[in-house]
Image 1 (cartoon, rainbow, N blue to C red):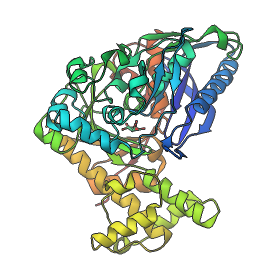
Image 2 (cartoon, protein in one colour; image 1 turned 180 degrees about the horizontal axis):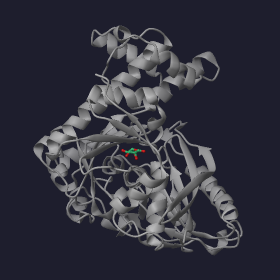
Image 3 (cartoon, rainbow, N blue to C red; image 1 turned 30 degrees about the vertical axis):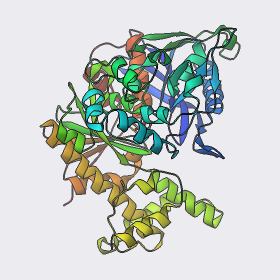
Length: 477
Ligand code: LFR
């Protein structure tokens, strides 16, 4: 059976990778051609991303992938976290120039943007129009706090910015566009009426394009680095969570998913958005999925709490922490020593000393503060699991649909303690894996665009089920 080879550039908040995959009707093989770190870059004016460094790493990774594929790379697809963007200005010579350094969504400047947007359009009206949960960093709030907005001719979301640098072509990929807050939740087109109410020039945005369309070929100037080839860049679900949901092998019509990395994205795949008062009050979002599906989900603080906790200990002790042995010790902590706290508290959004913030919160709420590392690690994991369980039940209630199984994908699917705690706290079986769901979702849409695969998302997921063995965690209580 014919196979094709594709490269997925997958950028997460704490690392990026280029995954080389060979795909066919009976084949789904992949490995990392490159992996590189990513993270918050604190500068005097706020928190940023090292976007040019990421572009260079992605290009190097593509060069490696192209070499490993023996010059047979059929296409490239890019996905990254949502909401963040680069601003560009016209130049006399043609190509646009970046203005400033893209901000990290965890930067606190957006608070003023929230007030400014809500003074023009209430949150209830916004939700009716864009179907988006309230997150203080949604693009429209960032834009309202953006000093350079007046000088910009174009805004490109992170994967679209890298796509522009690779090809010279500008589009706004639809799944990620849905996280800006400026897309109509029903038509999935720019809401130009909302833009004008907010004083945003609609020309700032490139046209919306669906996953499965072609962005263009890599620029000729890059060919020397890419094995002499001009590679086709295919638009995939460029919001990483959209690709993760494609790559979640949902095994029943009543399956739910948790895409767990820095964030835990907990929800359902629906055919239509749910834009009710109840879903707004529960802060459920209707992000755009691949093939016009709706990602009905809510953001839960994910492994960020744990990784920031480890980072604090590393900084305090001046030495690396061993997550595996910490998790082993955490597994031994008795139930009476576990403190369940509210992981959604806003103080956990910015980077910083999480152990101190957790103690502070426990103090305020009259909860016993976890003592020692194993207790703290276990309390974080159980608290995340409790919130996952609540979010699953709320999703089912709001969508009027039962849940029979939960698919945990992404980095969190490797955390056995978290998977088991989620099963125990929710009462649903948790089917864990694949850990690389995002890169898989990216590769599958490229392969379908190339004509190697065909059919619906269910058909694509069936290939994952046939080629990947998950681990099942059954509820013990
Ligand atoms: C996950 C994710 C979430 C989004 C958050 C910020 O990586 O893309 O879906 O809410 O990051 O962009």
